[in-house]
Length: 226
Image (cartoon, rainbow, N blue to C red; front, side, top):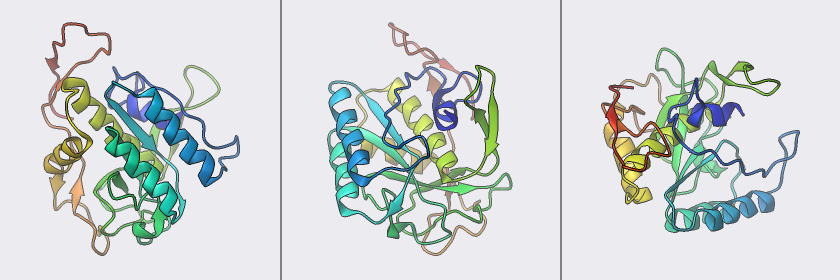
């Protein structure tokens, strides 16, 4: 709920007009198997046929070629993936799906734009986004919120940016979305990004935003910098 609220929630969401679809791949304790995660990816592939879709994966584990391959195959199918880099203060390339080459792997920063102490780093990270002390929706009621930290909180910020880009131009490929995100990111401001990490902080600047997913005439309003 917290992650979905950051992607597209009415109060805290980056892309407030997005259609959110939950894909359950973990149990109520947050545990699961690689096979169930892959099954969820394959379900998303089938559900997204003929539509522009963004998938966020705020989860991770030890390196798995089969999981990375499933993500890469889904990207080739035209789904843009944002994935969390992991919370071990280690090389993200040793974790999956953070190591998936075609996904947008997101590290976490603090309110001062420094890399969060827990955030993974390295050449498999594509961009950083806020992930420390993030407030968003929570379970319990329609007004519940919670403030928590993790690269799982950073990744949905980037998924929301991707959704805005695709909402404004559904013909963009995942590679084009990824390029727009890294090219629009602010360079050189992440404190201690970690060995081999890109010093890029995700930023959405003056992007015309179609605020409603039901906007049939494809008109957008310029809402300014984010």
